[in-house]
Image (cartoon, rainbow, N blue to C red; front, side):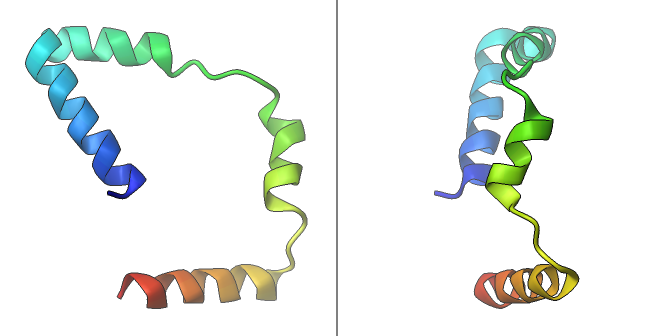
Amino acid sequence: MTLEQVRRIGITALAQKLGTVGMVRFLQQSETGWGDYTKERKQWLGNPDLKELFDAVKDSEQSNA
């Protein structure tokens, strides 16, 4: 399963067990995050140039086709 599929199934399960309001309240609690995104994103993304970004999107589209 993809991460999107797992997320969709999880949200459906939460809604079934907790109801819509309970699901929203749960997600508000659990999605606050942690760490320093601004500092960490450079570790994740590096500093790609425009051509690298274009190539990554192109590769992603081809693999999802």
